[in-house]
Image (cartoon, rainbow, N blue to C red):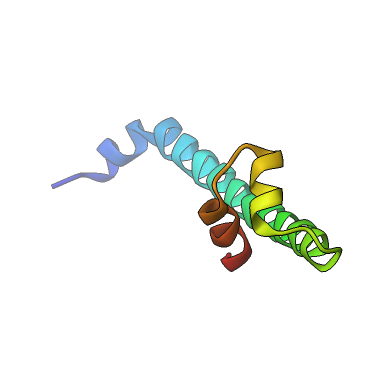
Length: 72
């Protein structure tokens, strides 16, 4: 069982864990924001008459990847 002294001895590690967690949360927020922007851009291309296959070819991905991007 950890004592208060043991916990205190690892204060820097706990601080680092908190920092890494905060960075991970920010990364997740940004990833969601970029996924939303990507989806809107792809939908705009579809609305302009391009097919999912056309978009996939241009981006170098599969049509199924485009479908997944639109579903997010």
